[in-house]
Image (cartoon, rainbow, N blue to C red; front, side):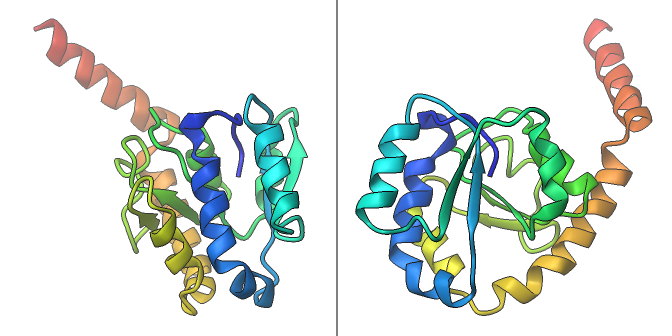
Length: 174
């Protein structure tokens, strides 16, 4: 995960889901690394320690050019309550990294569930925990990463984006 520690990013949702599914995540040797900083970081850090989840959730702090860490990941998790166009999701696709994200505006507009990523209902830690416990999740991720990579190359390259923006602006000014 990459993002500021603020309410919008839904780290409380992540925490509750991990708390519910900790044993299964441990069995699969899952580690969720969070790159970022912000107002809620100390609060989340205390909860991680209180519930002994520091072997699953790793707080990495703020990093310059955080997207460079994406190739090290098996997936990008984004639990935001809302987003505009989350660039980190596009950067993940550019690197062939699958996305597990909330079905929040901005995320659900670009990720197609079970085709280019996996979406869970927005602000629903129970659904995310259930997803974490799905035995097919870890075998599905590589295929989704490839599909998302192909979609990003097709839909979001700079020439296509400029062309779409030009069409949009031409429509608006007419």
